[in-house]
Length: 297
Ligand SMILES: C[S@@+](CC[C@H](N)C(=O)[O-])C[C@H]1O[C@@H](n2cnc3c(N)ncnc32)[C@H](O)[C@@H]1O
Image (cartoon, rainbow, N blue to C red; front, side, top):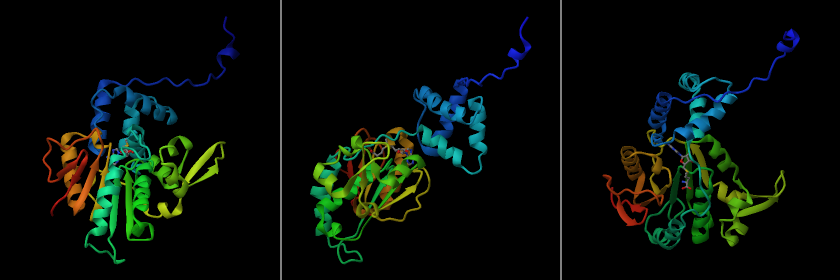
């Protein structure tokens, strides 16, 4: 006979990972595609299951259906942000795909300084957008490259940057401007010494902080590339690297057209090295691998 007092003992609730049916996966993938342009349809079921299971466990929900209903009915929109954060791939690094920065230093900046275009400060005006900036390594690299290659801008010339991403999680890292040694090792040592300070980290080891003179150039904002452009520009350079790879051709074509409209005539668009505009209808002129130029209005 079982001891009744033993059967009464409350056992800890063990979380049972829910099953993700094909139909649920399809619903989530379609929704994510519609809201962010991210295409999850090609074999990403395991990724979706793994990343959202953690969230479902945190919320103590039983299955994907309940979670998805929660996302759809959350009027604050916070859970949608959370869902997209969980599914976006944020991989980035300082000086990633360095040929773009070499092009900036050797071609773009000398060209700009020679141009007759004049801003408020009497010299040229420079506006750059890092669209899909992830945790900030890309916009900080761009700003350091400008300072290293232009006395005019490093001495206070009219230079501002916009850096946007869909994910609030990575934007918070970007705004802090603090990076560990693993990440900082991609910065050329002389540049590192000039624009970052090294401090003891709370948890041991070191942390590098981007200098205030670089940080104050950049406005970090949450922006979904699928949304209508709130920015008027005109921009001189747009970096949109390693994000269009997740979008389908139609989405890319529309986005590239928005970039075209926002660029100054003569401005450049930089895309990631595994991305291409070939086969798309667009008005840009090809300059070099992954570099395109707007020649006229
Ligand atoms: C792989 S990272 C690329 C970061 C950086 N551009 C680079 O090349 O190193 C892709 C970034 O795109 C962002 N992203 C994905 N979909 C987006 C969308 N619809 N609008 C804005 N950002 C998006 C992700 O949050 C992620 O931070």
